[in-house]
Image (cartoon, rainbow, N blue to C red; front, side, top):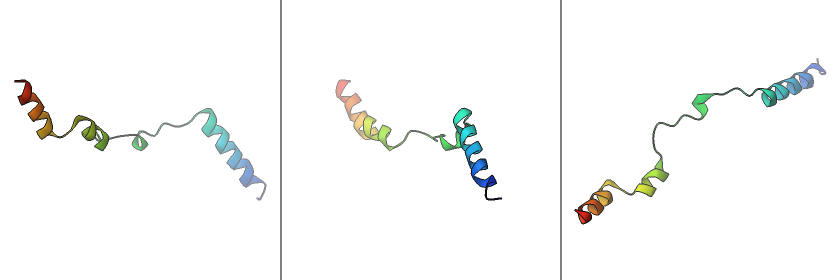
Length: 54
């Protein structure tokens, strides 16, 4: 039994390296994050800049 655990762990590691499984729930984003908000500014700031050019 003690021999089987390292062999199983090695086989699992090899399988993960050769053919990793894609799990979209790990990478899914619901929408733009706080970095996008900082980059674009607030709506009020955007509206003022639009009014400036009008």
